[in-house]
Image 1: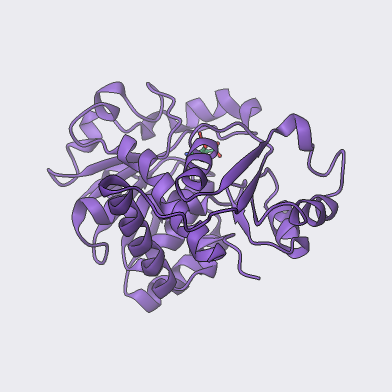
Image 2: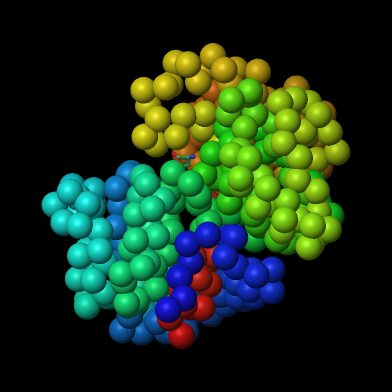
Length: 305
Ligand code: CP
Ligand code: NVA
């Protein structure tokens, strides 16, 4: 059984295959509409956290490919509370052809995959957000033409989004420089794993605390919220720690003149990114959001056909 749980599990060849498929499905959709590659297939979508992009892009993606998607809200499933994670996996597998889940504990995604008899897709956990990273590299490749040798500066929290970007960059030969406040850097084990992949692709992975240094020579500046879903109690402490890490016009002007500015959204405007930058000429945040759908359709077609 193949799943899509982490970018780390995908070979570089497989990632490029998914990117090419996403590109082709996107072009086909815009030209003539997609063929019904997933006719009669159903996706079950488990959410323990809120979502706009993930829910709607998976649902529309399935629809465009001739299938259906079923939204299971946090209140309905109560994963691990009303029913054990293995039982949810085994029951859902009898009804649907694939499961997408957004969870708190990453171990719950792993357990779902262990017990499901259909493919499981990680729609965000506290550890990673691989669908986001795939859409992001699709966007970067569209805009820059190539990924190898490009430099991505990630400014902010060493979180789930950062982790998946580290793996994607390292696998695909992009250099990535993270600038996070002390204590909020990416996990050393994730960095070590990413550096292992980077050694094979010839890219460089740097983790530091200086945003100016990270963005110097960058082709892409990426940021995400300072307080992720589930960390709300830390909001004030984090606001203080992250204040010097705002992506604003001053920071953007220190990167390459044509730098792309990216954010997975939702954004806390005025915190990690200013309105001026999010709505400015460098921003590609809405192209990124659209590409979630194209990238995920490629994952679904790859797993289900
Ligand atoms: N970027 C992203 O995953 O957005 P949602 O939380 O709205 O799904
Ligand atoms: N890091 C954020 C990403 C949201 C898409 C979170 O986990 O809340």
